[in-house]
Length: 413
Image (cartoon, rainbow, N blue to C red):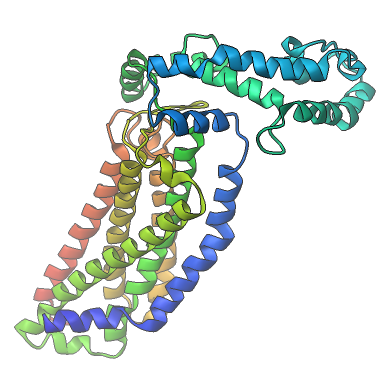
């Protein structure tokens, strides 16, 4: 146990920890936070504000009697009245044959038959003025949230919870039901047969998976930086020759591997906890922790139905698996590096490779768009992301164990 503690001290020194803390802070400020801020607060057409209102009022699911209480017909009437007030009698809207709220969709009309001059006039002058007037008719949410946006959002919400034919939404559902990937097809059938009542905002899961993917890359790099020097330092100083002089010394490689794995798990847990805590602290995602995630996000289908908390734990587990795999790889590379320079040269492509794999595994995990699910498992294996991450860990552990066994019988270093 004392030897194990000394091996841990070789890894956990204040200089390396300070470097990792600086790396995490720099990466979060320059990459993760700007991406989260931009995506999370964007007004994507995902029913953002209405779903949030419904979630605050009804909880994480919507029951039929709650849908009736929501009274979408009255909401349509209210928004249409606001739009009519802004549109009717206004010559600017009449110029483009928009005479009431029913014609509001013409703002996004086809421009194929328009002249170049008319297009420039519309885009540069008239459309901004029209949208400004529609915003003035909205009045209750954010500055960029117009009454026209409200109308679109209500249409989206109605399509989620009723049989209203919003074409792109139901085309997506039908496409998933007829998908050539067996897992997608089967889970889409099951989901469509159930009452679609999850009230989580559709951008929450997507944005959180992006943060988790970034955190996974940081964790993998940090593990390689933290654990790589341990064996390399022993070999550059010639200390490793003493290990071959006795039976106990030859067992030291096993102790060093264990110290490497424990250290990787520790730094992985610290970075996961820090990244997730900051993300939940600077957004209101935490209030959705008990909301289920299954559903359609544009042309992406979240196929399973864990809560957001369970989803976060799964992504944390995937990141931890990659950390252990990275630690085993660092252990192997250090064994075959004479000093820190060749070790770092070897570690660079290894870090890039594992980082890319971690991103592809964590980003949009459990969805029909996940790269590992589609490319590696061809859409045919349940929970393919978790299986792939476990496979990385297993390969690393087996390879490192082989190196340890070989060292026990090696004649020279």
